[in-house]
Length: 204
Length: 204
DNA sequence: GTCTATAAAGTGATAGAC
DNA sequence: GTCTATCACTTTATAGAC
Image 1 (cartoon, protein in one colour):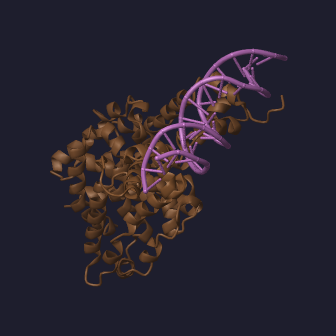
Image 2 (cartoon, rainbow over the protein chains, first blue to last red):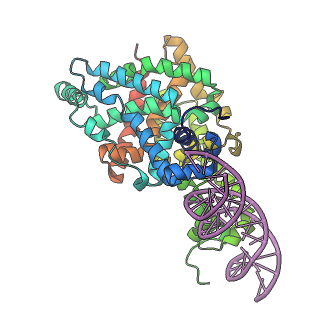
Image 3 (cartoon, rainbow over the protein chains, first blue to last red):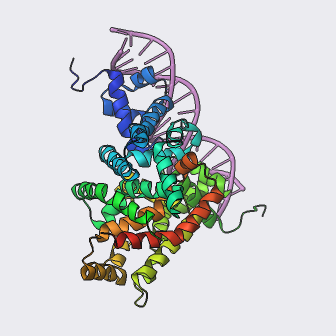
């Protein structure tokens, strides 16, 4: 075998598809790009995955799973406090996104493009609903009569954590930030975001 | 003339292009879509704008301008406080984005796709650098020895303001939010974000 | 300026040899 | 399974009539 790449052809195609689809999006990706990137032939892509769209749906589903994977345990841990859960969530997502920085852009962009192409049953809504995390949040709200709306709370958490990854090309322009500086900044934010959210919750 | 649409052909094409490009992105847009949406013929699009890419660059430049337009005066007002500038900035962007909700996704997505296709001289960096706003921010930092890094500060402001617009399709799924509920939420955030940022700045 | 028709190139998918 | 060659269709862009 003169192939340098590792893994079966099927796995190599999926690996290449993950990369190309996630970075360029469905429309901008040509099946030829994927074939070339995986070192196999265009015909083989269709042999294994039947069509561009079928292959895309697999990648989409896996990318969405990155947001759900591992979160369920954090949200339902009985012993940990709300603050501890926040720290774990932010840490989990920042670590994951440092490995897969293009995923949020991809998921949200394609979801907007064609809601039907998006597999709705990620299970995330069910994981959220009835979780210990949500109970703790609402208990705190009731007890202290805080104004913080759970939806604002969740959006703030996601915004402060996820947006920097999506806006990286813009931040590169505005703040002259290189990849190393970005990583350092996001490691700082792992510590800072829970503190900030906490301060927001206890304001007013 | 049996055309119902208003404006010159050239202006109608640009209007349609703005809509289609901004909502679907460069790759997913076909020049036929634009021609059809503007009620003119495909050939005329090339007659006026020479190519798909040339037309795209015009729209891109205009969309970027939406982020710069009107901000310069706010940032350089001598009388207003930092807090007042924050309130004005957040209000300005939320109002603008309620009118053009797809613009942030478009700009950031296409910027990532091909940095060269993006016109770098938006002037935003120059507007920021040396602004009264930045002076006030750094003065506050020096005087009170606050930990808040200006870059974190700017990213937080942008995250809390812009991210909800990009994540709308996701929020629709997670929180079962309709367009009306979204608008109400963003109007609330106009008031809340400056308060939150302020509380973050005075924490620790 | 505006149209129809068509050229020229690109792209997803398959047939068929090995 | 894996490849080359090719089909079928789409899409950008232009030629040329009006």
